[in-house]
Image 1 (cartoon, rainbow, N blue to C red):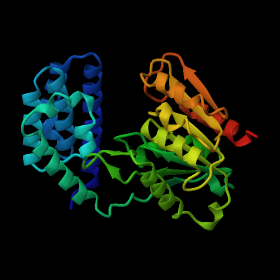
Image 2: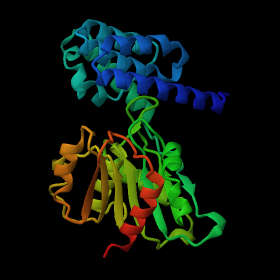
Image 3: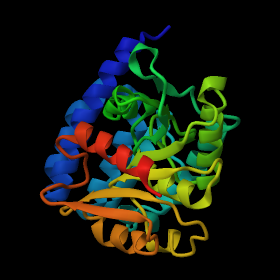
Image 4: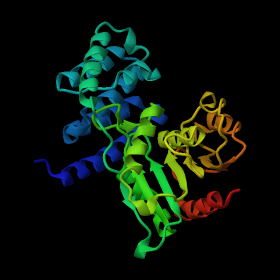
Length: 312
């Protein structure tokens, strides 16, 4: 049996590698980013698919789509797979899609992805309760960012339990690679949330529910608040949502809540346009912040939950 501590250590190493690669990607230092990936591949076998996709994007951006396709093919030969949308919708791979052999990679990836996710359900949520058995003020249901998980989200948002909330961190059942969970399908996201809520006990029934999340999870939380599916919410707390105006412009329900985003986040223009049709949602733009949580997030979160809970 595989030691879970090994998985945790590998996940931590991958997080460091992907952050380094992301920084170099933003600087358009593609060869340097590829060197980081190639130096670490052997130490990160669980992330074969993720690293191959990153490498393919970098090769393509560096002007070598042939090498990009070869990276995908080599990884596929070792068992890697990707959800087809990752290969077909990524702008970085536009030149690779013109290469002979790309369609075969997509077909094999689609078959493996479908087989891996057939009947897949989200893992049990991570639940943190108020200390000392204190009565809960509400349920904060948190959806992790793309490529992250419920355990990490619970750690990030744990200040809520100290402020008297039951924190329910949900894992997405939607995989883009064997390790990369995200929220592209809102109906599936609603089913994952419903499954998580179904694990709670009778003492949690009737508490006000606030939807929260980061990045892709923040988008899913915001769309949940708009649709009231699977359950209506008292408000939403969204951090750096990867949301587009066409996703919110037709909102029939008008949620209340707060959206926090950095002034240096590339998603700010689309987020601003998406939040404007929602008069009950306050947009807070923080100077000096990119696509990340702010310093002092714990105190911001507790104050914001208080604001959302007391909104009319």
